[in-house]
Length: 116
Image (cartoon, rainbow, N blue to C red; front, side, top):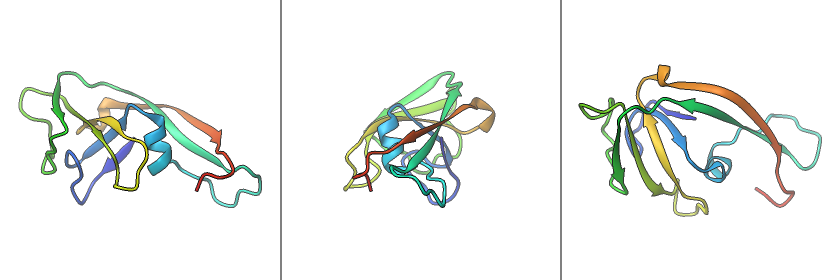
């Protein structure tokens, strides 16, 4: 889950959810501070998301959204990469009401030693 509150992104101000853990690992995984072990551990949130009626955007972007389009509950688009250097791409679903997302698990995992 990634909540974009300020500067617009792909689909504006909302909570972003990826369909690929590799995209999240590359860009948004939490790395607890002061880890003494190697390999380092990272954490991701696995969430249940109520999407309702979804407006499909494909690769088109709509950075000014603050709510889903009329008649829809969420938006979905992709595949997108976070930046040009990124390896992983994903389809992302965005909800604009935090009540539509339930963070169900915090997943802790070890990264290969050569991962930046």
